[in-house]
Length: 157
Image (cartoon, rainbow, N blue to C red; front, side):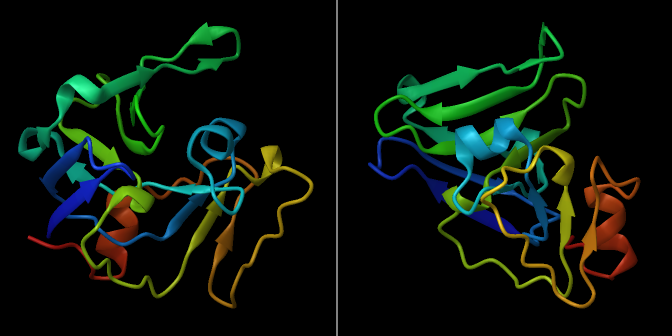
């Protein structure tokens, strides 16, 4: 699925191909919550890094979070003007890019179930709105973003 995204002020626009476009995975970690959260969580999608095309690169900043006292290799891209979270790229998985669902302008498909992860670091004020078939994890689930899409037959070509 081809996705189009942008920041709030319009300084950055981007497109990419996403075989895993369902916004099903809600991350409640403090990094996502503080850098990109809205309801106390953030949602990443799965895209192909080689298809990422960006307009307004000069307006992009990169933040590398400190995890357990060490700087993460993961790069959180954001707009330097309006601070919109755009995507995460990690050189350990160079073929992948993970745009934040909140930055996507294309219509996204509605997931049939959701995964709530890293609930162990959820803020106390956040209410988890888990539905009947949703899965909840204090840490990371064993099923990857790709595996979730495949299990439900939702992977796009």
